[in-house]
Image 1 (spheres, rainbow, N blue to C red):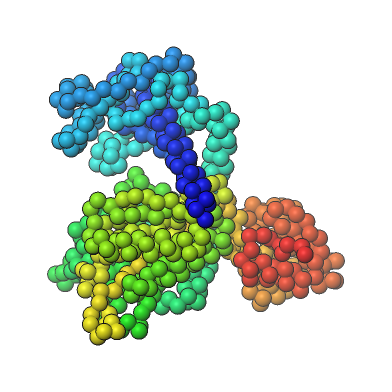
Image 2 (tube, rainbow, N blue to C red):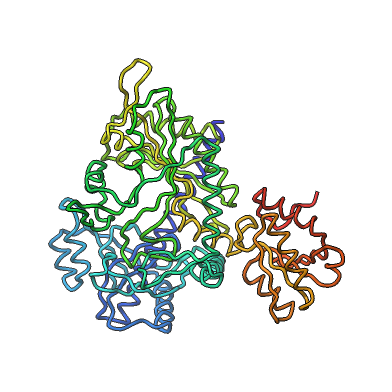
Length: 596
């Protein structure tokens, strides 16, 4: 077991080192790009240029809008600078010298002003370019990797729509040409799968300027997908002993003062509304309501654990520049649950949540990575409680033989947590389940139970979400499956295609039989040719196209075409129902049962 743990540690260390090397290379590429931009636009003003997961960007205040031709020229100049092998050199300067050096760079001056008094200020120089920067960087410009500039987008300075709009150039950099080409292929596939594009094409959802940015309108097909996910989620929680609860969409200011949200989260909350002279807020979190339900009665140690689950709609302010389709919104429904238990029950309850999370990952076809975030510098609660809660999380993970990475000091101020990142079919990370021990709310709300000794004891509380926001989760599913949902999730599961007008009656009879068996069915009895109807069904990612003509009507059968373009030929209706029913019942990711 120790050998396995050592190997896991080495793998994590190697992965972390690779990520650090990539970040250093990409950060250096951002500096080289900034030099190329300044050479082309000497009056440009520099903002920031970090490395990101997929490459790097730099924000510029420029005299005109960039064109694709500009990007080509900047990229070519970057390659020339790389070939010149200029050294990256670091030096430290005083705050006064930094302000003097960057006196013509207003964005840099603002960054300098915001630095803590004891901050070491450093700058990096290569060739003629100098930037305010902590680093680190590669040795010289030849080591910035194989670079490609990708796009230009508008970006408000510091994400604030009241500040200047800058131009952000995105680029990517990889150690080898092959890795660059593989990334570009993944990027092209990701663009093909973009949930905003597919949402329009498949008629799943929309966003209306008249309704407001960041607020999703679920169309019937998208709403069906969400309904099926929510029904599955609710059923699985009921099987595992959760009680379903509902809490109001608005609440008084007093509750958020008590919970601490007004103190720590107010900038993400919407302005209060006046109701009969008292301020009320749109709900940003479901937690306070769940604690109030727990506190509505005296609880005995025999009552615990108590598990409350809610598909609760919450509203959080996001700057308009950060909104992104269904993935970053202002109103969303969260699959929240809170578990109230005795301290000695923590590990078992966490293990139960892990079981549920792993089951959901399997059903939806996600790989995953797990992270354990430990006590930060600023925290509440005793060291003893932190140690016990962290041990409960780690012991639960190890009891399930789940590998995880420890993120030292990355926990919330009110408790340690486990974060599970889902990896989609393109290997991209998505926010997944979170299991968070909370020392804060039980204290603030004086949440207790009567122990075996007859005394009052502070209850242990676990926040947890498995799917997270329904909007973000369904948006992720759209991209994960490229709109081709598993049969059980498909808004329309079968399209019946009559070959000629005389087959319409049989087609509708078949549809009635399939609907009676629980399938979601449409009949295309329009005037288009059969192949056009089949193609349209495949473009809409309908799993089954069922063609019916004279032979099928005589044999009580359907000719089965799959959206994957496989032609399975004629099949008795009862056999089709049995096969489709098997796939749906098992929530298989396949279109037909695997052959024995």
